[in-house]
Every structure is written in C-alpha cells, then in structure tokens.
Length: 461
Image (cartoon, rainbow, N blue to C red; front, side, top):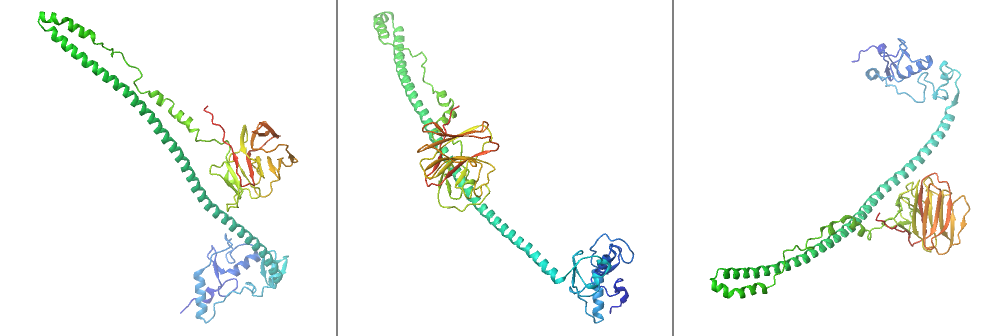
C-alpha cells in the first residue's frame, strides 16, 4: 500500500495535493496553476520557496510526482481532479470577465486582485463574440488564400504537363530539322563522290588507251630489234645482201615518241577538296532560311497558333495553355523572342489585306494581362483602315492602300522607329522617341490567314 506522507504530496502554495505539478531548476515542485498565479501577483519568475529566479516561463511537468499524487488519491478513494475550463485556477470561481491587458479570462476575485490593478475588462460573452468575428475574418482570408494557392498549384500542374508537350514537340522538330540536314549532306556527299568517280573513270580510260598504244609500239620495236640483231650476226655476204631490206624496214615503221610526260591525267584533288565545307554551305543556303526575328510561343495569346519554325501566326479556337506571366490574355498578339536595347534592327512582315492585324514594338515592362494602355508603337489594320497607334498620342489614319509587306526598322540609339512599304520602298510612318528600355517585336493577328515574318538574304561574307 502507498505510504507516502500527504504533506510530501502537497503544493506549498495551495496546501493541496499537487495538480499537474511542474518542477523548477531548483528542484522545487508546484501546481502549474499555482505557480503561474504566484508569478502573476509577484510579477517576477522566482521560486516561491527559495526565491531562485527561473529562466523558463514554462517549467517542465514533474511526471513522477503527478503519478504518485494520482495513485495516492485513488487509494484514498478520491477521484483525480479534472481542471475545469470554466473555473479560475487560482480562486476556483467562475470565469466571467476577460482581462484586456493580460488577454485571458478571469473571475470577479481576480478583477479586484493586485495582479489586475488598473486593468480593463469585458464580459466573456461580449469578448467571445468579438473574437469569433475577428477569427472568422482571419478564417475567410485564409480560405481565400487557400483557394488562390490551389489555383496557383493547378496552374503549376498544368504548366508541368504543358512543359512535357513542349519538350516532346521541340525534340521532334529538332530531329526533323537535323534529318533534313542529314539528307542534304548525304545527297551532296553522294553527288560529289559520283563526280570524283566519273573523273577517275574518264582519266583511267585515257590512261589505258595510252598504255595499249604504248604496248603496241613496244611489241613492234621489240620485233625490229630482234630482226636487226639477227642480221647483224649473219655472215658478211648475207648481211650485205639483206642490208637494204633491213634498213628500209626500220625506216619504214614510224616510231611515235611516248617518252614525253602526259599532263592532266591525275585526279584534280584541289577541285574536289578546295573550300569543300564552304562550298557545301553555299549550296545549303538553298534549303536554309534566316529570320532576323522569330516569335516567342510563351507570350502568344491562347487563340493564336504559331508555325513550327515560329515565323508565322494565325488566329483560331482558344487553346488550354498555362497562364504564365509572359502570356497575353486579352490582346491577340505575340512577341518576338529577342528584345533590343541598342543598335539598328529590321525585319519584314507579310501582312496582305487581312481584316485585322498589327505590327510594331512594345516595351519589356508592359504587363501582358488586361488592357494595354500605353508603351507600344504599331501600324495596324482595323475596320478597313490603316492606322498608327502609340497611346497616349492620338491615333493617326494612314492614306496607304493594300499593304502587302511591311519592313519594321528600329534605330534604338537614335530613337527612331520606321515602317516601310516594301512594294513601293516608301516610308509609311516614322516615330521619334527616346527609348529607355528594351523593346520587343510585336505581332497581332485576328485572321485565320497567316501573318508571316519574311526570311532575310544570307550573305556569304
């Protein structure tokens, strides 16, 4: 049976059996509520017995002592006391007020105690209502943020799936382009090897003909030499009798001179190998196009479709695309991939007589979401009229007709942007502006027909 003295299991503050005992660094234990109340009244965190200052405002639970106290109470036939949230832990009175200074519920005795001197109080029900409203407001904000986070996560998930589509599509296009280049190089290799082998056959034929002719001469000369040598060994009378015939036979047979070297028989290696790579590159220009500007699909409005080579754009049914910050969501336009903050640049665009299009430049800082109010310069066709737009400047109607191809010419350093009709080589309009940030080519299209960037000529130099 339990034999521990009741005094050893009693709190020195409340003189009752320990309830939820905690232990201080000095090894003294107290009820948690008693210690907190004593600290509130004394306004200093010290041990009620030895007065040693505590470094922690939340001392640890004395679990062993707690178990001993509960066992003691059970063996005495008493219930282990359960703390009531509605009663003051110090005075065991009902909690009816809320201390605004300590931000905690208190009883009427606490209100009149020294620990709450000159404090402000509110009724519990009034405070609860106010705090519930306040927390409900925070809860609504949290729910709104949670909804926003879920939308962002959904967009991230969609972006991840679209990245897979982009990577797969881009890889296929890279492979297709290299397949074309490989095919061209294979055909070019076979053609050049064919020319080399043809030259070899032709020159070998000539060489073989000369060898055959030379062999005939060698055979004939060998026969004459043998006959002459026989005559030289003949007796004198016989030699003299056959001398004229032998001499006539030697003189009668013409001997061609094959001892001179023959030029032009060797393979013209220099012709086949000289500047080989450069010459192949020159021919490659027939299958390669260079575009000074290409479009950035990550900026394209969802109703715009770009060609595989990113040089033309058409209007069509809305696509499900990630709503990334770079993408236009209201204007049916797309930007060039590269921006310019210095130097001179130009690019040609085929516009034809479509019902609605626009070409020009736009500032990098312009937000892509919502209505674009300013920060761009363009020539466009709307409602059958050719216009110049550059808010906040007033719109200007152009007198040109039936534009087919436009050159956009930017001199960033001089602050000049010109639009030229390529068919007449006349300037349609020029802007003069002190550009102070990077500009991107701008293309707008509301037609099912393509608005195209035209290739530039490739110079050998």
